Image 1 (spheres, rainbow, N blue to C red):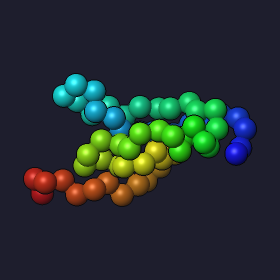
Image 2: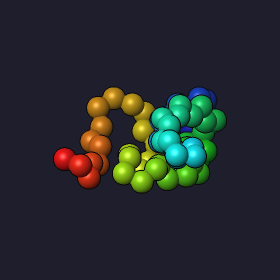
Image 3: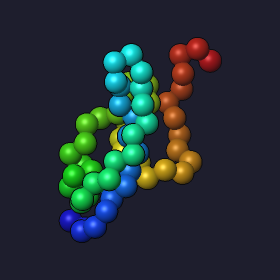
Length: 59
C-alpha cells in the first residue's frame, strides 16, 4: 500500500440525485474499499481527466 493522500472521484446517489464526490483517502486500500459508483455512471473511483462514460438511454 502507498502512504499519503489519494484523491479520487466517485459518483454516488444521494436521495434522487447523483453527486460527483471528491474522496481524500489515506491509502490505496481505502480507495479499493469505496462502494461502486451509481448506476449508469463511472462504476469505479477515478483520478479525473478524460474518461469514457457509459452511454445514456436517451441517445
